Image (cartoon, rainbow, N blue to C red; front, side):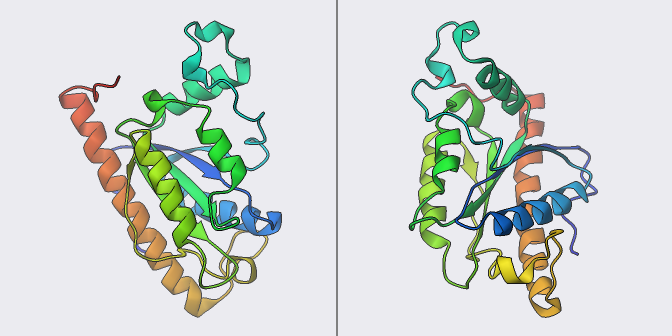
Length: 212
């Protein structure tokens, strides 16, 4: 597999968010695969899988509480953990030509203090060769409106035929396809690492991004 930046001087911490498609087995396969790829580079991960993102429908985001102690404990805990992350990775299948509802709902619980000036990668996947462009576009717009810096990619979906080409353990089973997918994922995550390290260095040398 191509280098994802394992020689970088920083150990980065990424939050990985897994959206739910209509096929939970496919979601689990993709999550296992991407987690393994990231951890192989010796970066830390904070996982928010479909089960952990089964949270109440957002009525009052955490930043709407003038006194954070009044927010639900799980919400305060999640905010603290996300604030400590250097960047975000979103695993995004396409559901009804848009973002998975559980993923959008989870994102909406938090404000720009979480997302501002932090890089984000969107890894789309599907059970065919076609889906991914609309969900990625919608998620890109949502994240950038919150201040995140979304790393562009032009290969959609990044993981096609995910259900049939990934084993239950999250291993690619098709030699020809796996080489292509590994190259695309490696390049994309290396770009994410580049931006994350650059921003992290700037914060340490200069100052954090001013936010509202």
